[in-house]
Length: 163
Image (cartoon, rainbow, N blue to C red; front, side):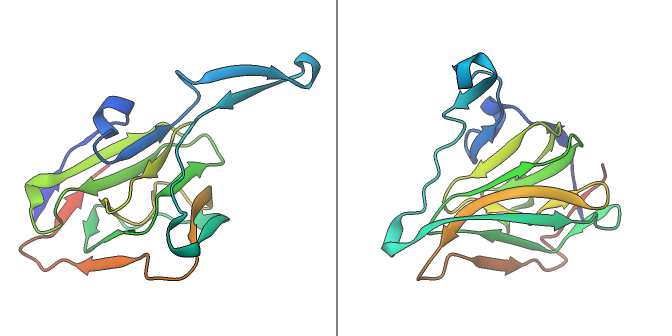
């Protein structure tokens, strides 16, 4: 099994896979007579193919046993998929260019104030949290067509994460 190292999540490192969703570097607009701030252009949600609409949901996740044995990767060919944590706890992001090439895997640790917006067709692991009852706001596509492709990895192609 191939061990994957985990790097800090940054906009530059994650750019080939989508967008890091965070307030750092975003446009700040003062609103509500100065009693609130709006951070604009956090991500580009792309879900409008084939008559689809935006789906906003909440996920509640629990951690997988450590070390994490990666057996499955998924991607969404018809739209982006955005995950944003609703608590300030680190969580993991695992992506790859090709799930059958272990060297193409990249792992990141998000700091709890960062989300990700996976670009279309980017292979990624389902949600990976480190503590119980982690809540995420999720923005993705809802509508006709198959927007989920999964691959199960055999022993030769499996990777392992040890946070």
